[in-house]
Image (cartoon, rainbow, N blue to C red; front, side, top):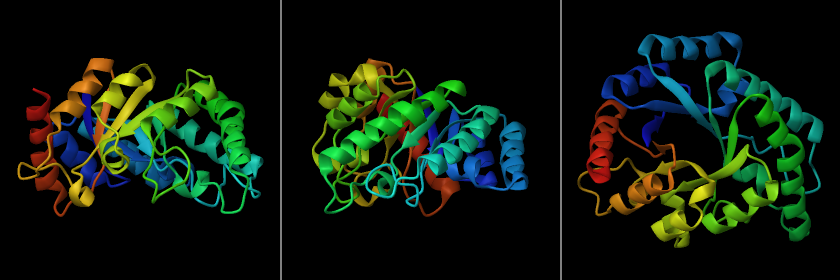
Length: 257
């Protein structure tokens, strides 16, 4: 399993990640869908100069582009996704992370079952076909209940991935959110055939994994490897990217064994 780190659109952090020996970096979908060509080309050049790949991007859809509720604009959604995935293919992106709480949360007072149907419809009719054209897999990210009211547990994510009925819509598990909702490595093993990506962080404060953290990362990482998850990214806060990312990579390699 490859180990990566989220860098946003920071070209300097791309170079640092490569220097430290990460297998890949994870960027953000807005770089693909919204950034001007100069910014996109600068990021692409940083990857090429550093000899590292950008295999995943997160923050798929902005809150203004709804996938549930009364304000869905399917044309705007389709255009945004097409633009981002076109550039994603150019960059060599393999996986797009669909967290996007602001987009998918079912609005208060809106029929919840209808919101579920809307999300599945968009997955099937817009997201999956576009992803397939560009050779990309979209992974559903279960988020804590404080973030969204839909797809909170790994098993719920598996249900929606199954309902999407596409090889281009699968599942992610994020250790931080799993801890918040009570999921464990046993849930990873249960839904393993659907997993295509993972995120990891120290649960306390959602920080980079450290030697001093009172948390055992080994069961999670070993479960991911057991089910064949191809990659896992550090997605967390830090004080010093250079020092903290280097230390975190060492912690994860040690935990993986």
